[in-house]
Length: 297
Image 1 (cartoon, helix red, strand yellow):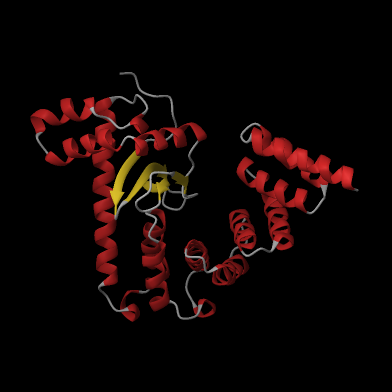
Image 2 (cartoon, one colour):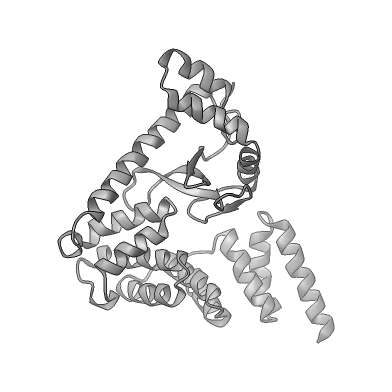
């Protein structure tokens, strides 16, 4: 088989009745190889949804859905990988690659899968060791940030939130090196958002921004504002992010949607154009909405 021409290596895994699709990334903070859940099913279901923890294309999402729909074939792959029979591993496992492998070179894909399992095992061991210590002994902005980030990337926000509750009674009282505290509070905000605690997420991100004002924090603050049904605040946050760096197509689409709902067509137009190549159907729907609003007015 020839290697697939895709950016991400999609690696399926089961956890607590849920199918997770990890992808390899280079962590922007450590520049090391890391793995994040890019898509997942709900427990006991087969519909695959984005997690927004890592980039994944519509084509890759479709491959993940095909993988989830063919549970028998996926189980054969898991069985071959788990048996550890070296004489059969490369031959049998390569014949049962999951659909999301997308024609990847079989040996490279299996090696990638084992590297992922190694990293995941190490990460989870680090988390367990951290959990076993008392909060007053374990908390330190940089090391605690690493633990929270692992759990967030692995789609375990409730577990991370339990640690944060014990470690950080008050986000306003966290002290340490400026960048370390800002990074920590940004991750705390993301985890709070993932557990549905929007107000706590906004509070943590506000302090992170006061410490270190960056474009990515304003983008996330806009997402939190949308979740909290604060569209005016979301627009303001996206505007601040846009002044620092152009919004990516996904964020441009959200910004366009907010501006369309606010009946601000001239401001929405450049964001619709930016998002159109990646999201043609949603952009078409938003433009139709603008036409309806124009007729009504």
